[in-house]
Amino acid sequence: MRRTALWAVLAMVAPAAARAEPEDSFARVDAINRASLVMTVETGIVPRALGARIARALDQVAAEAAKPGADRPDDYLRIEPLIVAKAGPDATRLHSGRSRQDIIPTVLKLEQRDRLLALAEALDETRAALLTRAEGEADTIVPAYTNGVQAQPTTLGHYLLGYAEVLARDADRLHEAWGRLNLSPLGAAALGTSSFPVDRARLAALLGFDAPVENSYDAGQLAPLDMGLELTALAANLATTAGSFAQDLYAQYHQTRPWILLREGALTGPSSIMPQKRNPVALYALRMKASDVVGAAQAFAVMAHNVDSGMPDYKRNQAEPPGRTLAEAATMCRRWTSVLDGLVVDRARAADEVAADYATTTELADTLQREADVPFRLGHHFASELVSYGRSHDLRPADLPFPEVRRIYAEAAAGTGLKPDLPLDEARFRASLSARGMIDAAKGLGGPQPAEVRRMLSGARARLEADRDWLAGHRAGLASARGKRDAAFSDLAREP
Image (spheres, rainbow, N blue to C red):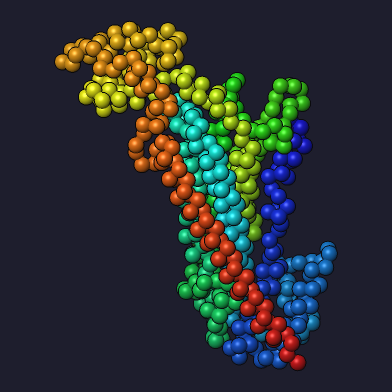
């Protein structure tokens, strides 16, 4: 396959708005400096007149760093000389009660926070795509598989709803992780705070955190490790589900006559030699990205494993740190959404695949027990013998000769004390082997029956809307905190 086909798909599944880079580490250190300056002036650590001078210096440094091609250092020790050059040596008072040991974890958390919300958005879009397709395919009968073998018929809507439920749990995990992530390390200093009257709660509020990480040793030395493990594990969990979905589709692509494919064009790619090939480029782009995420999570676990507390191994911006892993997971979700939008379902072919095998024989055994009081195990044995007979004679269930069916039942019932006569007439027997009849007869909670699928769809849509509200609320909260920080900083910068 030509390389251009893959990159065309990757460009399509990651829209420009979604690919926009979040703030870089320079911008995050700058935000930390602004919050620190506001707090140190408010608490009297830095005199107000000096604070105004430092504020103007910070604005000048940020403006110069915003110029095309300008250096944007990500280490405070490289940024501080730029500030001193404009505001003088007293500008180093900005660093009172701080250390790179609390600045770096704060930078990482600001990045992880942005990435987690971006992942939440991408995840919700994938859930929406699953629900849209599930609604459109609520009555589409398809085979379902266990142990890699056709097991029972279901509907494509029921199947897709299953994956939507998994992603809803991933959204729950993400929301729970947010509560632990959105706590500020800033003000913990190296690990034991300082003798300056640092207001850690004010720093947290100025940066949009819910509160500080209370224990100052935990804040900078321990939390980056376990939080990183939690975030990468969350991403890997989601990626494992995406990989499972991709493999399910591959099971069809391996067939000569698959019942589900990708729309030809941007999602597929040609072969350089075989004219008949329509390679599922978008599908393996999804699977590869899922593998990237799982691999990055394992890399972080290895990097964080078996080191002393406070080491830099799990705090450095290398080797797929948690923020980057979350970004990869968001890209994966966007690829998954693209695959869902491009699915082409051959309903007749799917129904024919179900009808070609004996996936409805469980319902035959259930019908015998429910309507004729035949013990389930006897009904199961009878149905199993029917399958053996039908397959050995190359017969579909609908083509089984009814006299042979009655004979096989009599043999199965021999010695059980039950009458040898099959207690179903031919019409009822054939109806019990109908895929539509089996699906419509289902009564259990969460089954593929149309009424239950509609009920689950309604609940899933309500959960999705609530989760979208959660995302909008948290983004609005961060924007509000930034607005308040900018206003306080601007007031300071305008001081004479």
